[in-house]
Image (cartoon, rainbow, N blue to C red; front, side, top):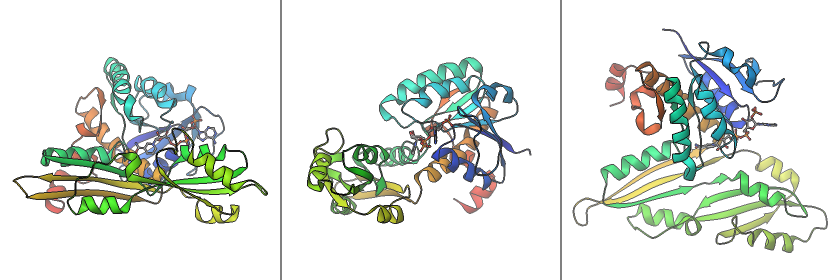
Length: 324
Ligand code: NDP
């Protein structure tokens, strides 16, 4: 059987994660990277093209993996590319998923292509765990916690404060709440109550650290309402200990079947690199949407619509023998 031919649209952190993951797949090859910028040097040396070249690759790429940002890129790029190719993206603006789905669905249906949106870990693997646990335990409570992980948006917001040279912000679940749930408690928890925001800040020489700390803790929409811890460190320390992009989190469901018979389901991720894991999920599901397209599927889909066997490199017989 011939390999699944993969293209990458947009070349940032996530794209490099996809590029690395494709190298690990026995049934895939990377055809090229397509960027709005000319002259990109790729990590693997795979050729880079510009977006204008995209339509020329119709018939030469089986699945385009869209790696643009959710804020503004994917809303435009996924429907645009779905006109020509089977596509997959990682769109993670949860509130706008229904709107994005409708836009992509319309274009993909008209073009006779298949598209899968909002793959990754959240949305993505966490979404699957929520559906599994809630279907199996209809009477109960679900929880999602994020971290310990870097929040890019919050780190940027701190860097914009006067007197701040560099910063890293980690979102961390509150261990005591996690442990209570693991032990069967079903507390009312929202994002504010359930998480701590831990900040590592490099201040300029002579900057007023108390003022910076106060500005962080009182920043509306970012830190107000959260327990926030601010640590001032040197640039060397930040570069040495805080340059990675780790993330992860927990999905838990605490449910009851008969009176007093309780079950706790927990799924957790501890990721050294958010983009490398997200890219790996996209690549596995690129195989899934490729197969769905081969079965005649057109229009837009999500991870909920792909049978687990379709993301695997193993045959149905192998899965029954070794993974059941
Ligand atoms: P980046 O900012 O690294 O890349 C986004 C786009 O910006 C790229 O496609 C690229 O487009 C452009 N770009 C990248 N680097 C540069 C540069 N140096 N100069 C100019 N433009 C650049 O974002 P990430 O790859 O980190 O993340 C992409 C998206 O992935 C996020 O917006 C997030 O929504 C999503 N995500 C989803 C997750 C999930 O679980 N579902 C988890 C993690 C992330 P071009 O090459 O065309 O210029």
